[in-house]
Image (cartoon, rainbow, N blue to C red; front, side):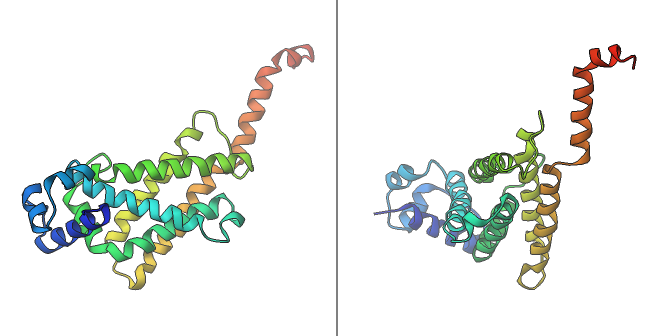
Length: 217
């Protein structure tokens, strides 16, 4: 009986050996002693199969970091860093597939379709994290901008992913450095700043313009 894991494993082995997707589901199924029906019960296409592998990387990362004893002690920034570090640590074991997959699905001006499911998981995770940070006052709630925080983090994630693909340093230490600097800068932008105080003061003055007139200001 075919399973999601068994088909994913067979697919990864095929594309890394042949350097391309199988010519047809029929041939792939026959080579792996499964039926087309078994394949299509689990995946609609090879692209959908590949998407599921990337989505699985994100799902596994989130499960693993939330299972850590220290997770509840982390602040919002630390939880965000934990995701990034853990994701790329996990990806080390599948570097050949990741490189093949991303090069086979050039992104152009948009996120590659192969990362669609991963992006959805990523955004759901960080939306929760951002809300948590706002509740604890670690993150500033800015009208019109707060809903874009997750987009800024996704851009940072894609940047690190591309950086990692080209990183030749031992143990990918340069990628770790890119994560530390990039994610910290991004979260710095989410925190309260003097600009927030200035904007609030401006709103206060606007709302109390009548008082200013009575005072002769």
